[in-house]
Amino acid sequence: MDGNIVDIVTVMMALLIAVARLIWKKAINPEAPFDPKDSVMDFLNGALVVPFLLLFGSVFSDRLLAALLETNKLILGLVGVAGFFVLIRELLNKPVIKTQVKRTKQAGRQ
Image 1 (cartoon, rainbow, N blue to C red):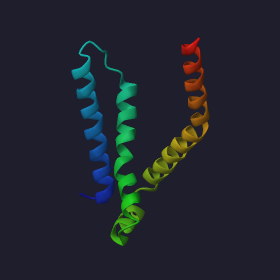
Image 2 (cartoon, rainbow, N blue to C red):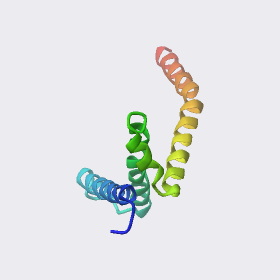
Image 3 (cartoon, helix red, strand yellow):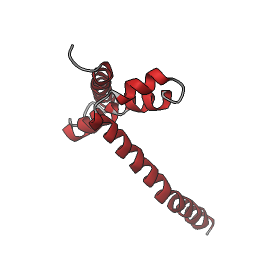
């Protein structure tokens, strides 16, 4: 194997998650058509698992930090972008959710 072990494990995890989600979706609804967009998104989400775990673990271990820094820069970039979008979604949607819950409760009382 010529690749970095972290990159290899990242790709393997992405494949595992994409296949597992496909099997899970078919088990829940066997009639559902195959949608390649869902599988691509599952693969990309799976590719973020290992770098996120290494990022968390790097707080406790210099070896994990070194492993994280040896990974493909594209994967680290994807992790950063994914984390940024999750943060933005949380910041922007919190007040909207609370407002919607209040409106739903008020509508139910009338």
